[in-house]
Image (tube, one colour):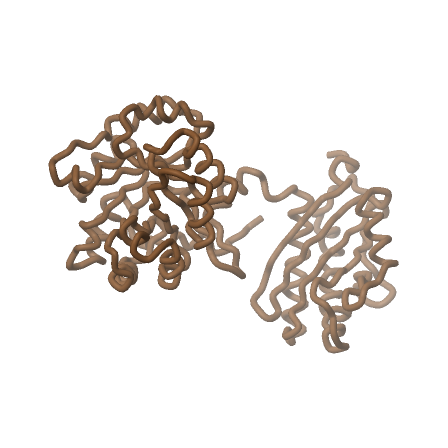
Length: 406
């Protein structure tokens, strides 16, 4: 590798430790005559109250090479806080840089006198264990350096992990990245009973909750926020079966924290296009219910963009009168749009006995209503379906909770 190719500007990040001494380091590596060098000089000469940059030193009069500028992220409000930065944190960053050089983390062809590092560090105001402050910041700095110099993470890891990851300091935003899924259609127009069903259902990453049309008609889309009280991390769909004003109804569901919203495939092409565009613009899933749509392929080809999920839906009234499913069309649709990314759900008369057939015909999501919501033992009913779709215990992907090696 040529030094000039890797050291114009490299970026690294690492989080290590536990609160309140938890360390989070963001850093830049670059040549002195490039943008990082200019930022280094400006940071060292342009001071701001509470965020005074300082050179990393192993001890007074002994900075590491490359020279490293430390920038506090949290506003320093008193000398006690300053002592943590000008003490264990400063030492940790400097020692990590020096050790990284000795251990060969920097390429041999890099002239250490021609590059600089800027490290932005987080020190919680309530951190008080100086040994932990040192240990965590040392480890985070060295890891961030290694990541910067190896261009970590590779784009393949970003794509693979983006929908399964959970930020350690916030809530989970669920995404549908690992089919098949079981979707519970919560169609009972009783918020009390609906919450009870949710509480009884076993926890699983492969479970989707649907705020059914009768439930929404009785309580309005605000019912989704109420469901969040008992299912904060679960993927929740607003089954609005939109027929007009597609953008408006997407916005309503989005404001109430829905992860997805459903439009009827019988809506006009204009409504469907506006519905799908708005959902994707806002970052929630656009779902189109194909119930009673006669020419599915022709209708889908007329759209500007495909939705994220298609539902092959046999309605309850049709189901009760013996109407047939259209699952044989699933593979045809997937083949026609083989270059597009979307999931297929099936609904209407789903039982554990016919779930395998639906999956074999190409279904990614199994939607079940009365078999679960009217069951005497909701937990067992849900577990029966999860087992049928191949979900074994534990049903939670624990890997997503911050396990990093790079």
